[in-house]
Length: 244
Image (cartoon, rainbow, N blue to C red; front, side):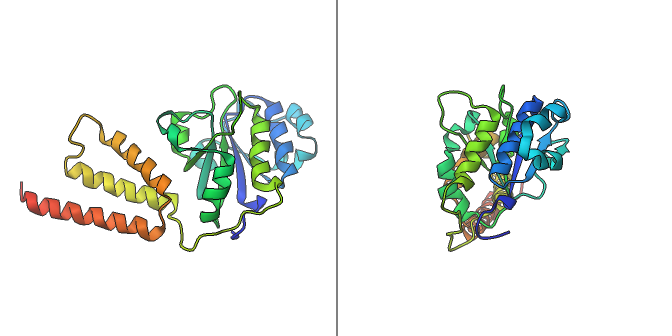
């Protein structure tokens, strides 16, 4: 992986694509920007003649695509997952525009292997699928975009402009895996201390905290610092509570 994002670092993931034409058109869009890796998660039908007709010069991408039985399988080997969606449910305030993702997130995440995840035109990504994404991106538009158009617009923002995306960080940004590990440990500490003390569930509170920490874009040392602090607080709490 390089300190400059290249098309070879990007994987396009289509979740349950509904038509061969969509798959072929996406393949055609990808090859225009040099992106070669396409993964289809449980497609409604195997790409065949119609997909090949729509792919045109994107046929090598189509023929090199692979089918995954789950989103988790499709995301193996990547360390940054961006979901393209029109909605985010409880996570609506975490939505980024393609420009924000390119200028704010990517430069501090390089080097990385990036997966761009797209849902169906009809229903998009489910809440469970959105939860597998480290960042959520919404392409500004007045209506629903065709799947191939959405892929083209996102890849154009990444690779179609003259400027390149290079690392600007002076310290390593905490990986999504490190943040998740810290949050899981923190949830255990809070549960042991009887939090929350009101009607909200621990899951709801952890979702809020996850939102806050992702917006803070913590570096590795900051994440480890917070994890150690909360561990120490739990130890002191248990000592003060005494046996029982």
